Length: 211
Image (cartoon, rainbow, N blue to C red):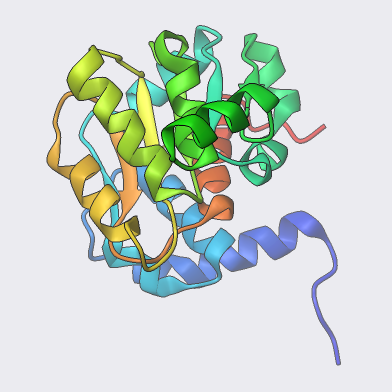
């Protein structure tokens, strides 16, 4: 059996397969790139109609990255997957505190999840940052509470937590607000690879070198 072995050829062929599923969605060239990387990461073209990108989201994300904004994540899997080589060119760093002792203490004291406690601990550091949540709905709920009640203002929220408890509701709440630009997917789908794919897509829009 013959198969493609060259990485870029595999990627290009994948995007060729994805393209027909996007042609009727009236997307900009940059939106197509974000959608394509999400679908590629998921291996699931059923994502096409459920991806939601707010009007200012792509430009807000690119501008934030260009000025060296930091990225705050809910789980290590998201932090690990982001292209740190490209991010470093712009001066940004990635932070995840879900395993920190202080976060564990806050979580136990307040009877909340660690990912939720981590976002609470980040607090004002989230201002002008990119928040990328791929696993925990509670983390997204907490970020939205910080926005609503404490005037925290990230540059962009990538909110794609996965699961059957709270995920769809947290993403619906994200999509319903208009203060912070966002990228999300409707329903129970999502996950850390999806959050990673969005961040990396934004980075590739700024710097597509693969050295």
